Length: 125
Image 1 (tube, rainbow, N blue to C red):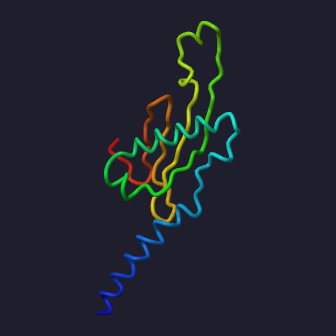
Image 2: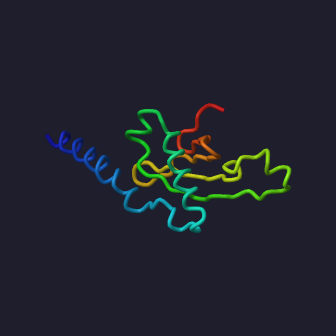
Image 3: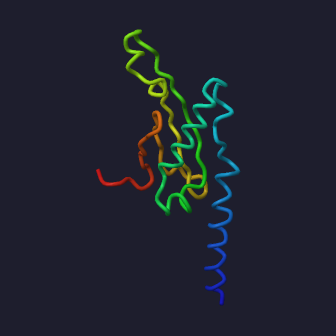
């Protein structure tokens, strides 16, 4: 009975407290950005959340996301601005956190796409 109680207790701690801690201590990071970049940060955060699309990541592993930075690339010349879409000048970095606010991975977004760099469980290189 004691072992059963310990088994149930650690599961309750991990799945309740562990899942709640990231939401308590990790903000979305958007309020700290300049007002001009906040709309782009919202867009980057939604793109990044869609990149973590496996059922394990979407439903269990990724507990919170935070926009770390939004960079706007300068326009070099007038001829270049015609070939580059406006969204290609904006790059953002969004970090995902798992249970107990452990950093899981980072998504680097541009326009409507992005790439994920796994930190906790790197995939084959």
